[in-house]
Length: 230
Picture 1 (cartoon, helix red, strand yellow):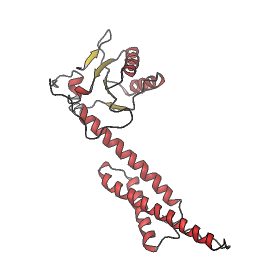
Picture 2 (cartoon, helix red, strand yellow; picture 1 turned 90 degrees about the horizontal axis):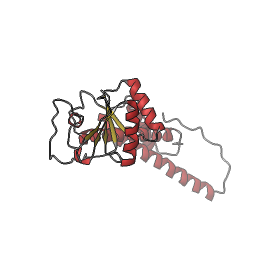
Picture 3 (cartoon, one colour; picture 1 turned 30 degrees about the horizontal axis):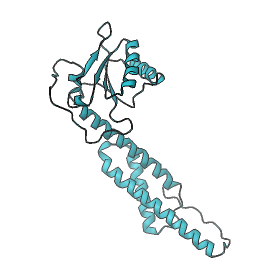
Picture 4 (cartoon, helix red, strand yellow; picture 1 turned 120 degrees about the vertical axis):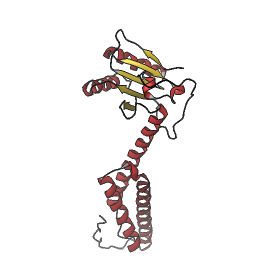
């Protein structure tokens, strides 16, 4: 199926490229676009190797016939590769359109805006970039949660060396969270692993201490002051 254009009465500047939308959702999105006086360009998996400019019919971006489909290295999860690329919308109009799509139950999780930088990208390239960005923010959120969990835990039964590793992991996480950068992905993964190890060691130490306390008959003891690993 070639990308084709759904044309309202007048040719508008505002256009939305609908890629791999399921039929029912596609029709809902098209109805909302028609109500806005905007144009819908519909594309499928076989158009993934075409540039965004070509799919939108822009001058200087010829369509490559017979080039077949191209699969991105890592596609977003959830609703697969469903995505809308918006072109020519002013910010207020775009916000209003997205709100209308949401209220109509026709929202698509992955959205992009056509720019001078990405108009020469293939759809597969765009999906790969979105997947990388999605992965980055997922790991950023995971690291934030693990850091919070570690800071709320009790490291007092850890050995000195294990506690030093916990402090190192928290410091690394705080540095990354202060200034996130997609180029730090490998460092983020290492920090996440370090945070997980420290949390696992604290949990194991707590279970061991609990078992020992039970064998001792639950003798009374004065709780020690909880050390701060920040």
